[in-house]
Amino acid sequence: MSDVPISALLEEARAYYSALLRPVFEGRGFVLPGNIAVGLGNVALELRGLGAARPFVVAGSHGTGPLPPREDAELRVLDVRGTDPLEHNRNVQRALAHLPSAVQEAVDAWDPEGTARTLHTDPLAEPRPVARRSAYAARPREWIDLEDKVVIDAFWDTVGVPRAPSQVVPAEHQALRTAANALDRGHGTVWAPDAREGANAGAVALRWVRPGDDGRQAAADLARIADRVRVMPFLEGIPASIHGVVFPDAVVAFRPVEMLVLRPASGDRLFYAGCSTWFDPRPDDRETMRELARRVGAELRERVGFRGSFGIDGILAEEGFLPTELNPRLGAGVSTLAGALGDFPLILLCLVMAEGEELDYRPELLEQAVVEAADANRVCGGGRTTERTLTDTGTFDLVRDGDDYREAEAGEEVEATLLFGPGPIGGFLRFTLNPAANEPGPPSAPQAARAFRLADRLLGTEFGGLEGARNVRP
Picture 1 (cartoon, one colour):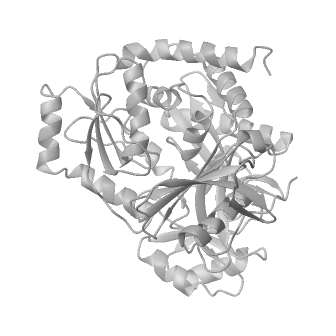
Picture 2 (spheres, helix red, strand yellow):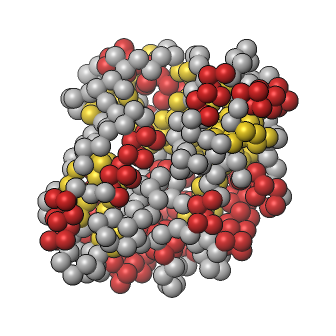
């Protein structure tokens, strides 16, 4: 670790990269499409801080929180709905591809010369033109294909990455059942569909077929969206990801990020609730994950000419970190890491890298600044949509009460907060830990589970019993 104080190091990096990116963005117009208008407001502010023209935000839904003010962005909300986050994302992408004429006319009036670019920052968005403005940092097909869960295990084998055993079989019950019988370690199996309908994320399309479940319903569900399915043993351990950035002559690796994948008491679904950097893996596991990111990044550059941010998701199982998927794009964990950096333009820097801008990126400075800042300033980005419609917006202040949370009373130190409000499915919740009242190290998932159990009691969300994963490598 550096002897430079974290504040001084971060300030040096912030000043350097802001100056580096300013000529890229200064005076330029960008259409900012995405799922939620609230989150896009932060991107608009970053662009304005780098000298960009006032951007045009086109969002699927408003979201919970303040919208970007008119002086910072033009805004149109398409009011897109969905039954789950993945469907909402796909509905938003379809709506963006076929904008209402009034929105198209507004974009044309805002950018009469047609020189603006489309800048996608949502992790699941495929960078495509919107409103006839060409996409910035568009991904080649070779990059996109590696996100398919039925092909990525062959990539791990090529790189020499240890992984759990798996089989890819037709999306048919008997084939799936046979593979599951061969692979089950005693905790059931996880079935992941191919990317026939587009990228899958947020555990929405995964099925955890538990012991005693014949998987018939899971097979029927997956047959509607996939031709092939990967079957793996369910791995006990903490779900985690590791992120890196590929440069022309270097690969940097950040710190591990815990994925808050909670377990319902029954059924074949998993409950994804965001990311956290509060969890500290064992030092040897941390370094193994970072070295894996460097190896994978170098292979991505060599095989498909990859540039920019990527993430590896996996499980810290009994054997160590075993990868389950590769996301050659911005991932949710990058946004969580960026939350520790203040107004440092990490996401925009990653997109500039993916676009292929030839700049003096100073990879070592970026790695050192992000890792040290993320270690010093922990972030819990726990968020979850709910089918229950929430029309009001508010915050519950939480304190520990045995194995649960309760609302804090006057004068009590707040340990966590739970923000609630409207969302594109019905409602939205965000769980945040108070740094002054929590020590880093333990996983955040158990605390998130407590918060969502409290939401059931206070908001009627009906999530049911939820538990965090067990740490098998303490």
